[in-house]
Image: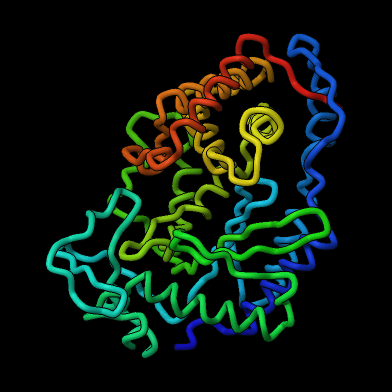
Length: 376
């Protein structure tokens, strides 16, 4: 099965190594001083962001990777040294949603199981090759297809083999290695001069032509985003990620990116609040190489806060807007419950370590009692 071109993976891994080794990740400070929230001005906040954040590095990543046509990945920064890259798969088009039926489960070798392993959650679904009006023959072969079902575990197995071959073919064995573990996704480690960078690679089927019926968004009587923005967001469709054994995970990375664009066209401070909150998470609330909270969680908090406070006047003052977002984050972490913005019944903290969440909740509580920022 050659649904992925090894040359595309080789290009991805080459850029991965080049970016991390030559660019580095200078997101940590060595000396801090404290500035109270009362003293904060727009210039002080900009200084904090400038000293800590490095958007130019991510922009370089995106530009270099997007230049490897026809390879068009999506990059999510989960933590300063942890990334998620979705790798698009080819050969399927004309998607239509399937009918509800009794789904089948399989062993790794393709044998049918008599009872379900577990039901899919709200962000998951099964996938049949018949749901696409056009499909290459490779998608009908037994290395990914069992009785018409496209099985993520088998897709991941093929993908992993290609990643291994790409690492060897571009002479990256001394810099890139595949990580073992219980994760369903393919994880690679990239060695840099400073420390190790971890990247999760998720094979992805892009569905840019429709919006899933199960996703009832936007909710009724909501003033944010505006209807024009809603239609634009939904027009970009969704993705299906092969990141678990049986179920394909729904992803809305393009929709989320469109929501983030033009967030402050009314002159508000939403994006500034988000950037400062993201950096505070890295510096104070939830640091480390495997944080219980990622930038994705903070983005969900941003969307929910924007929906609750939809007016321009709600985002005129940085202090007010920032503390609202931190209070929302504190509530979610304390309750171990954060709803996905598009599928509201999904708890994004369901499988998070509760002790780690309680630790972060304690740090957020201390911050809210005396809001201060570490400023170089």
